[in-house]
Image 1 (tube, rainbow, N blue to C red):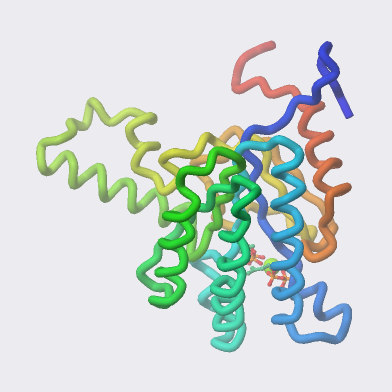
Image 2: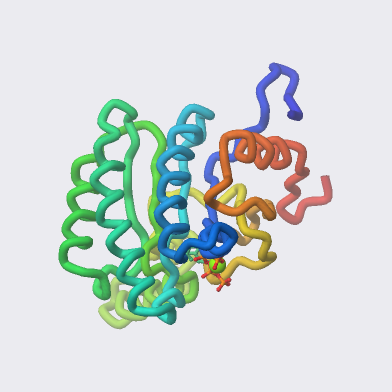
Length: 240
Ligand code: IPE
Ligand code: IPE
Ligand code: MG
């Protein structure tokens, strides 16, 4: 891994994961797609600990997109049930100092899931370690559209003028209001696309694609992605 003069590697402050390939993982084993999602949830729980140990501050996971409602009722219900079950485990990371939060439209989720999400946020809000954000019914376009509506309302009510609507103000209206921009976006499963994830927030993210399926993604794969990130030259438009 590339190291700076102190021997430290250049860590991303915020990593976002597009957890893809669960269906294919299951298919390869002759199992139903839902078995892949179950295994994928195990990967998520394991990886959160590895990310925390690596000293990363923010990790955001794409669990269910605004487009994933197109899947069969059976698959959608299985995914929602898995989220409900896993939230209990995640919030019990009491000793690990992990803060949980959520992005995505909650109104379409079950009351049980909404309550568990609110409870997880409430119980973990004062923790000072890794912030884990789960994106559930999240879409980047939906995020931006909702922020645009909020800013229009603020302007209508006279709390904001069009001239004072800066990038910073707009960012504070996005679902990620208290989370820094994405430094490294990792997609497993071999597809080379963003699929409507954090499109504003990853404007200058380094992208890392791997053929490894999410269920098989482990600590060594995480280290590889971080190692690759640490070698990239982030110019942000400058000529350095
Ligand atoms: C990612 O795995 C999980 C979700 C989208 C919820 P997929 O279910 O998309 O798996 P593939 O891409 O079909 O293999
Ligand atoms: C992206 O995966 C969404 C999540 C990982 C939750 P998809 O499998 O839904 O993406 P596409 O359809 O291949 O672009
Ligand atoms: Mg997929």
